[in-house]
Image (cartoon, rainbow, N blue to C red):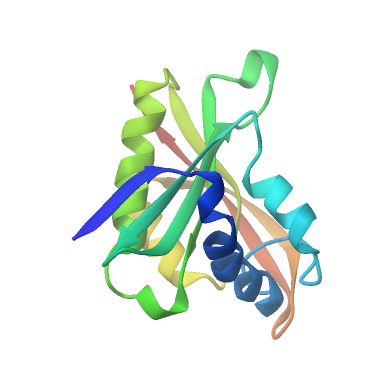
Length: 162
């Protein structure tokens, strides 16, 4: 059983414990792999956004951030970022958080959701977002400096929520 709930300050260490190795791998997030904890968590806990955690067996196994993609006249389009613990991958945590996120985005009044930078080598994420109704609407050639593969494409993915 997985429970998704709003982030609380008590979750800080657990979220960092998931986020840090993902950043360090340098294969999915554009943030510098050496980003210090304070800066990375300032991004993840954006006060203009909504951060959630996924718990399984009383342990945090994932988290996501939901926010407006742009301010002002673009604020009706949501944006989100997701992390899943390496020990919980393949258990459907990402899909559950994705479904929860889409529901929350609708509840908050967003009309669409857009992912600005899905790394082309992140096949699991691409397949999940397509399964959840997202389409690739753009390719950014060589936009991501992948630690293993060098410069790879990034995709813009979009889904209407109305």
